Image 1: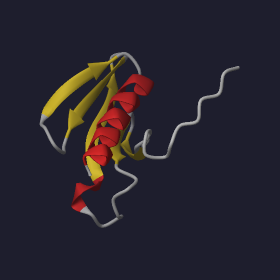
Image 2 (image 1 turned 60 degrees about the vertical axis):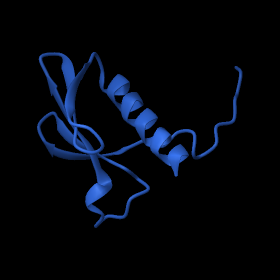
Image 3 (image 1 turned 90 degrees about the vertical axis):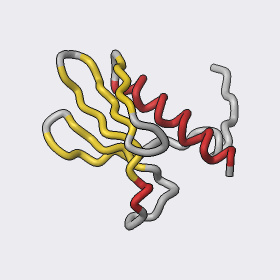
Length: 85
């Protein structure tokens, strides 16, 4: 197995907070618990799809085949924000 070290800044996985059956709020782990910018997206699993509504930086809905793919998209956006400073 090839192991490639990844810096903490390279991947910033969102924290998920369940808000009901098949629904979560994805939160930026770098933001404080009382920071209103902590919420990044709303995710809902429905009809074998994952719908992601961005609530920070841009409005819009994306559709994914899996929760993993949706979380990867959120992590990419968080990493890009961290890189911008």
